[in-house]
Image 1 (tube, rainbow, N blue to C red):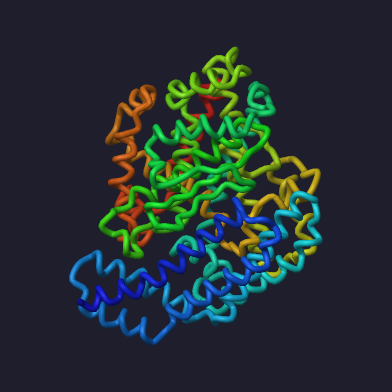
Image 2 (tube, rainbow, N blue to C red):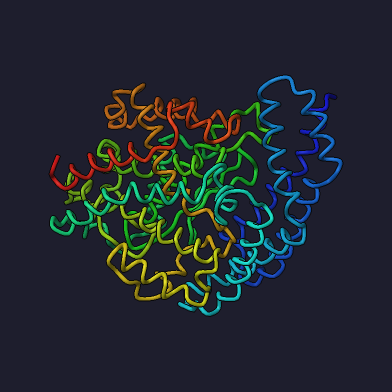
Length: 494
């Protein structure tokens, strides 16, 4: 057995603990009764501690060093690079802090579900104070960067910084503001998308869409849940998606297509890498590039609905009188709203900007948790021109902070940017993609994305991967050009 084989064998213990943690997290959201919160929190804390102890152990360090000295190819080198990064981060964080975060998030998540339902922000103040204190301590311990936010965003998108995120929002803001103004002067009817939808039926029809695009339901599933997410409790061969019910057609449909993007990324990893840590998405922004690509660029395109609209019309009689053109424009209507996951493709980025700015202020202690609702509402007024009528549709709407995910939010908007950079490469190779999609054929698109992105796993760091695919660094301008062209058509100017 080579040194690399020994390292991979030990890594399997880490992977098994991670899979168990993912399964517990999925079950907590989909099936677990509320009474199980305390025990589940303890279990999640223990699993996090065991993972951390393996990573920081002398034994694991020696296996890494030996395997590194004997690495024979780029797969082994990439595996070692990923594990060194994980270990180096873990060595900077005390085991007690890691366990505390996992246990705290277990309790905070359960309370968040109650708090959101009951519009009770006060019940989350203590949890958020603890979790943001953990975030500040984590930032300090990890170090590096020019801003306290840098080590936190780097946890989710390696190499990303506060400055990069801020510059991105500055660059994409003008086109969003332009079409918010255009939309106010040119009303688009989307009343037919607001209804008392049969959520189970909507999920069932959407499952047939997801299956046709290419998701393998022998290796995954799709469930209704209060918050949409994608988990992999069994690696690439056990992908669990959830979708979010709402009173808008986009609720189940758009969230399913979004999570399908994540799921396709994971399902189409290389099977021969299944036991390696490189057999997963390389980073959250690259992951979001795929979920936002499938949800918006493909999933809200005219060719997509040219094929699938009839399927929904057949299932839902209220859509029968609606023309395809009217439906497509309604689906892409630009209208500031309170809920991030129900937002249109443009103003969605303002929702992310609000969260990014607020968590930066919370990390740097320019803002106290108790003052979060007021600060949230003011930023919504300034950016979107609306003020939430309750905290449930305001600062309590997202699950992320109850999970301790500080630094995560900017990756959604970064995903929009990267997704368009990658999509431009795809469409250069598949010039007739619209014709193929109009026929319900996604084979070529899925294969091209698998070749460019999915089957690369973590072979390269995210910045290198994007550069190798697109020939350029992170660049918001392709997204700006896409948004300008698309919404000129939506609003009749192109």
